Length: 590
Image 1 (cartoon, rainbow, N blue to C red):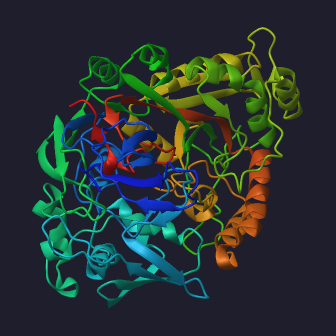
Image 2: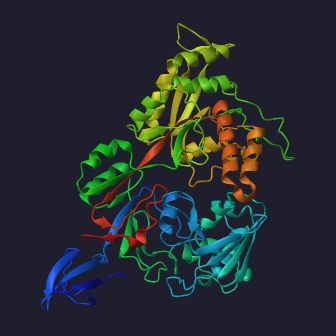
Image 3: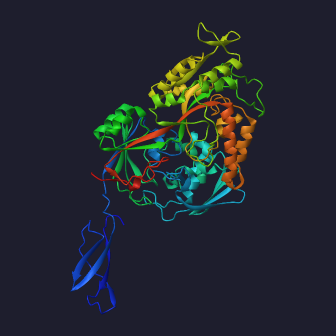
């Protein structure tokens, strides 16, 4: 119980007379200060007693505000439209969904759902929803709010990337106020990922979800200032471009937060955040770049945490023709005859040679100051059940790289130091995002190392949005980026599938094509009962094929560096989520 200290005392009375074997048990009330020893001996009415004390914790301080940082302002306070990092940062403190990620394992655990069952065909998930939950305005949280939230996306009227979450959902059925069924079109072991979406309160919009005009949602005032939330904090103030302030939701179903509020400041970048962390004007900094690590380690007011990230750094090799990007499949779903291949990178020997030519240990040591773990394929070692430990790392071996390039017909010109084939120089462009010092350092090292084996690289840093145009447009040779997994499901179908090889919007932006990999991915994702051992065997097989085909050069899995002020108590940050228990945080020294 919060805010109270109780003492329970059991006293065993031992008679002073050794001739008597009788013992008496009775209770004694003592004024016992916090910090008293667990056992103490006192005299009560000429008898020796042993007092065993069990003390509850000191009351947790209530109140106080903490400050965190973001490098971009949120664009919406409505989770249905939240697709950028800042908007998700705002919405995650206000809206909860059926399921959530376990902060320590990355698996799925109950959120607003108490428990669930799955039908034999794996198509229908039936959820029991926690009872007696309330929105911040006092209205009950029920299955009708779940229905309203997903009906909005299923309507097809919303312009939001979150539409992907319902691509495999057939319908939502409300069985009663606290029971709902989610029916999927196809059995897929990744279906639960779509059930993390935060619900919005139906009563704030309508009393009849089926009659609501979804076209009104995009401009609704709720998107800028929600009137009811289910999470631990309520949006109080939003000064665009500067900060937003969220305050305690007294009706939060897990218990009102100890903190009075959380302020999120919009900063110019990492340098400003680090300075404000040192001054105590910002309490929490995440995704800190490694060049600031030593500096922050010297700050006595900060705790530093290092987690293996849920992302990896990569070089993507374009295997389609960047001068004429074409979708892999035609309108009939069959192979597109107009799809052509990259004149250099279509050869797997060249792609493997590039990996051997790169000293990835040096790249991680210099660009990330060693805060990264080398990776060989697409599944992260934190997803231990599916991770392939048998892949032999392609260590730095410039001689092996040269041999592969020679086999591929790329002959070194001793005068220029650049290789060529049939009159074509071995010259490639490497795009990355400007202003990211880690990537720019990596790019410079990659350029220098490949030059040593006769590959000329033009490094092209561009603004992030421009990079996205080049990336999705498939107009690059090589691209240096990071990719996040955000969970324990290793299904990469969207990265490697032919249907995702669509210039302008597909996430298979390297134009990789392997019918075998697609078949293995489909089999693993639809495994009956989602049997983990059988799925793991397929995912290890997929990693082995991708390791051989080398559509990416996987560089490393970074360590996520987090700094948290020592005056914040109750924290238990996990590698998958540091905010999961923020309702239990408190300010030890307001």
